Image (cartoon, rainbow, N blue to C red; front, side, top):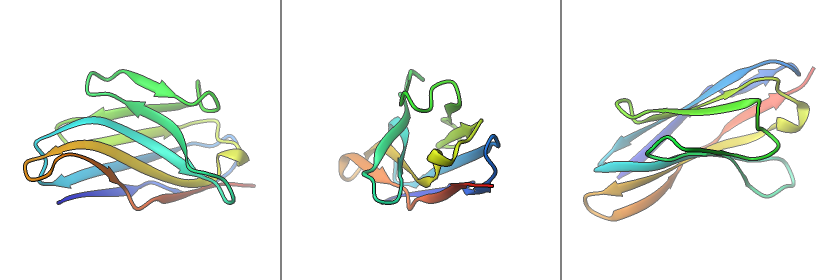
Amino acid sequence: QVQLVESGGGLVQPGGSLRLSCAASGSIVSITAMGWYRQAPGKERELVAIISSGERTTYADSVKGRFTISRDNAKKTVYLQMNSLKPEDTAVYYCKVWVVSPTYGALEVWGQGTLVTVSS
């Protein structure tokens, strides 16, 4: 069993910054990609950023230049540094991790979500 624990969400003013963290634990042989998605009210869940095992990164156009994804393999943790936040960044942010489990093989695991609200 693999668990993800997210932290770092909250209320921030426009132009402010937040850092999200997502730590994986449990029965893990290896972690390949790690990513962040978000879902705003009334909208579908969308990709925000992904980082591969080789630390190649991909970003949604809407966050390029403002958000930075990174990972600490020793801690099995992925981070999302969010700068210059805008009201349209308001959403529930979910981490997603692609892992190899000794029991089940390749798995895709979602975090529980953390709310980010950008408002004055």
